[in-house]
Image 1: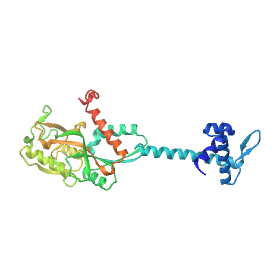
Image 2: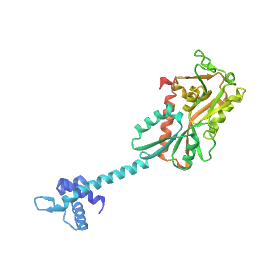
Image 3: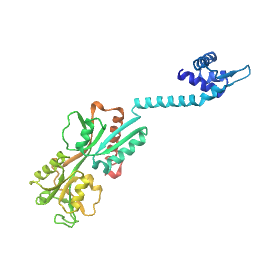
Length: 311
């Protein structure tokens, strides 16, 4: 028994006319008759009662019609899934991301991706950059959205998404607050302030980047507290623990007891960016479609003519 025979049986059951069924199946009538006879022989039962005037299903034929229809529907689903998977339009995709990716880029990218590829099951996992690289190496996720600078990981490709720079966050109405009228500051003016920095164990390159920014301003920061997430750094600054340096993308949030200040001098260490990380050897068509979608979203958001809010 094969799907061809099953399809012949279902069509004949619906039309109950060999000539019409053969025409619908685009085969000759003798071929249809032979196919039905072989099916009946395999099952060991008569499926159709034939007279000179009409044909109709036997009780055995009626009992298997619904099952055969289900088989054809399932086969159609299997064929479609196979085709979509081959074309990178069906399957599972696991993406890890750092917290700052969720401020604007991730939501736009994921929304666009889901609309364009509804048959791809997208799984998202928030983590730290260090952990994301481990997940990629262990093949537990397909793609990571990380912040650079980051530790070099051989075998992992880094593709920049959006350039950014660090800004200073200070507690309002505190010793280090220059007041509402000030939007730009010289970092060296904060040489004596306590700093909240990224945790060295979890984000060593970001931790060192902050130290280098301060060194380029002529001082070594006095670090009083470390934190893993950028939002935690901002919260600790709000509490009056000290000042901090975070990517400018964090400015989309309006903390109640802290303010963001641009640096007058943007040195090389002040530059940061979001980037995609993936293992080139394990990159699937599904992964490629996600990467392409994210790049298109970034290009759209950065084009002032297409996206007026970016200017």
